[in-house]
Image 1 (cartoon, rainbow, N blue to C red):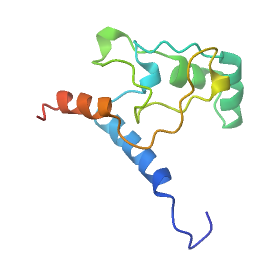
Image 2 (cartoon, rainbow, N blue to C red; image 1 turned 60 degrees about the vertical axis):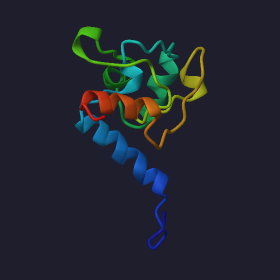
Image 3 (spheres, rainbow, N blue to C red; image 1 turned 135 degrees about the horizontal axis):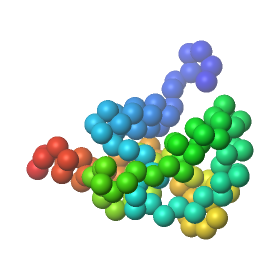
Image 4 (cartoon, rainbow, N blue to C red; image 1 turned 90 degrees about the vertical axis):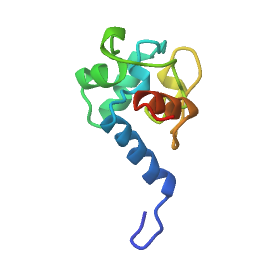
Length: 118
């Protein structure tokens, strides 16, 4: 983006909603105990190394899963604002996930239930 150019609101909205999700107690959706993603680990590790992550960081932030006893979760939601994008080459099988830029219906339902909002 050049100086004076209008910002792309989708690129602003997504990280704000995602980080507010963390502030409200949400985890990364791909780390949910009910997520069954078959990662192509060497490809994911290599891709994130280009962004400065070492293998331990990738294993913690991408492949690591929370245990059911430590969290409250719903069903796996590939439309969640809390999931990282998953390009097709990052997975062995299944559907890739793009940059979600809005709260999904399950995100909204989960937060209403978590904070007892009717």
